[in-house]
Image: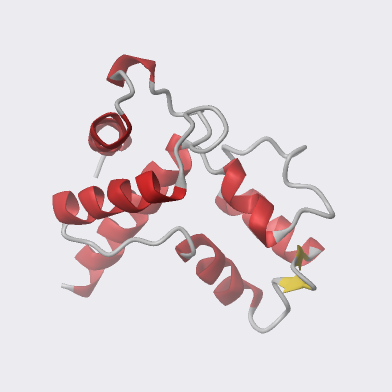
Length: 134
């Protein structure tokens, strides 16, 4: 699946759920800080994308994939993301400026760094995994 195709569905889901003009939604926008999406909106957006693409989505999928890649090393200690996990996240999410994925960031802070592009990549990853299982 092409990024632009998924971006259009993500953009539409955000616009419909939050009343934001589609043409103002850019891949680099953060979901919570720049677009003002709240957790209820996010649930609605994820549900819309699940129905559109026949997949199952959770934002915690990024954390799960990171934990899998760490192969038993801790992802976080006392809610603070470890250096090893930061390295994995930087590889998985290059769209997030590296200065924002820095030592001391907490698991709770991570959600505020998610961009529209991050959400698109999550959808693409789920679609590709589903296709491989078929």
